[in-house]
Image 1 (cartoon, rainbow, N blue to C red):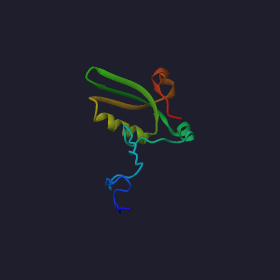
Image 2 (cartoon, rainbow, N blue to C red):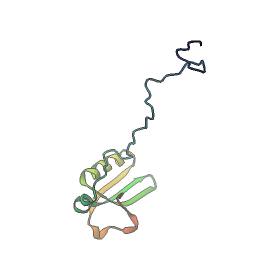
Image 3 (cartoon, one colour):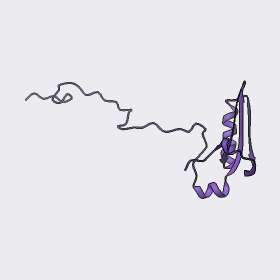
Image 4 (cartoon, rainbow, N blue to C red):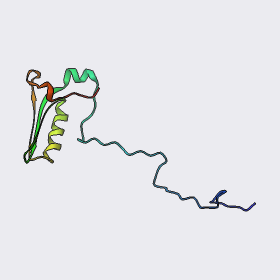
Length: 106
């Protein structure tokens, strides 16, 4: 039998990619860096409701979200880089419009 050190039975040399790991997956990155998921008890006791408004030209987006203060600051900074006018401010639950509320992920 003929000795084939690299090609095995096919006789072809195996192509190696040393910089790529087998079954490697891309790291998932958040759209707004700094925002994290938290446990449900922390959401209920610690998270405030925030009114988020951003405008670029004639397009305006208005929503209410439930965030901790640090994430609200990060969201404001991130939106400020993309839009002309940005407002992120905490509001009482009584002023939240339910149809504009973005509920936290379960």
